[in-house]
Image (cartoon, rainbow, N blue to C red; front, side):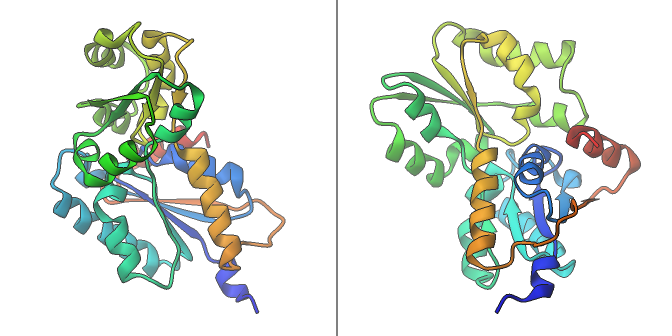
Length: 259
């Protein structure tokens, strides 16, 4: 029999900062009757320049924070944190669904065979064994090009998703690939907020892929499997928590979510 109280509990969503709000938007669209607690560890962002052990510790701290607030499931809305900590966390917290993120390489490979796929991600994500296994397992005859993207997380954390500073940073990263790639994988949950600016550089004919819809679909599947999906008919709500906890950060979070 389904635990009614468990169904009513919120879904915990975590990220190194504000990037996971792109995942949160997909989750709210997929599961509009669920309540969510979003935890952004903006005090320690970015994760992508830290060691794997540092990220594992920070991610577990965020998980504990969300569990203490009654989360019935955890979504790690961060590719870097997933690569560094998901396996460890699933082995330790066996009584709760933990859903992770991964770069959307498979959809990009399916889009066009024998293509060149640029994977924009943090340095740590690209260096993990998990990323290497993923790329090798799905790439087929495609050429996977990893691009460490220094500076992009910091821009989104500051609420900068367009403008001269964004364009200058992206041109520095992308200009050498213009006309040489067939698709782009946004391998960090911060990057979808820069989609418009990225497309303006690589071309509107170059599709961008992110994993957010897949994460949302997998979260629904796990909630249904565990019989803890909400049966409320009214819309749920979102509570924002951040490690810095300042008003500007919360304002940026609400703006990125569109509330």
